[in-house]
Image (tube, rainbow, N blue to C red; front, side, top):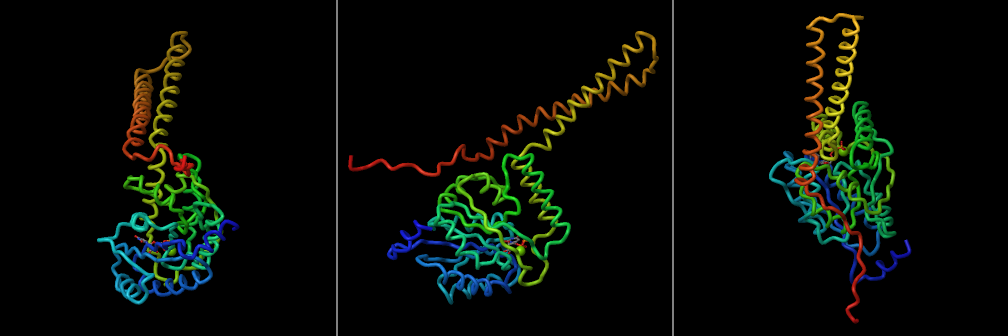
Length: 328
Ligand code: UDP
Ligand code: MG
């Protein structure tokens, strides 16, 4: 809080904030969102803000509404993508366009992310947090399947993947310019926006909120199919666990079948039991299957190396450096 006064007093050089809104068929919600944003920013001093709508190939009149809004009020701007690329890409496009801002705030267009929280986000940012994340308390219109799916997803990803995702974290977040610049170094194509940000680290603060139902009560634009593929994408881009599991299974099968083969041979030699040729054949085939599965697990390790190289994430991320004094 205290260092915020430094920002406030410097009226000639206000803080530049850009609010990024991914938009897919949200024509009915945009004006309401714009009104909420204007109201929310009235409570914040010393900030020069803009709102960038990223129209993700909407089929309704969203783009016309965005054009109208931007001609009425220069704080509202928009860009439209050539087709529907998905929210993750729309957010990336928005963040890349807002490179010059001191911070960006990503927010959904359906008012499920309450703009009233923006002053709190900015307050935390001014305290020195580089990422401020809105965390779901409860979501009124999430179905049971969505709730269970989300719980299972966070369990798997936090247990087995390289990152720990903020549980119930949303895309409603404020990102400092350091984070925005770092994001540019990521070139991976299948991406989970919030996963990448959580992977980066940085000083993070969470703020809990209860998401109201979608403003226009149309079906949420994220279908189960899209959500499922997003979950699979996130798990496979942060972990090779599925492939490694095959390897572990292979080692288990090989060990068990060779033990069984050994037991069969010894009992036959000391003439306790007699086994048919078919029995030996079945156990031997199982042994070979085990070897093949283990080989696949081994391949996973190599694919893992290739994956790391191809994705080309930055090796490390620098938060700050001291400046060399020029007067010396
Ligand atoms: N969205 C988008 N592209 C898509 C799907 C959604 O830009 O392909 C936007 C949508 O307009 C909204 C936000 O992403 O602003 C969240 O979408 P939705 O409300 O459907 O997701 P949920 O609230 O279920 O997470
Ligand atoms: Mg929503």
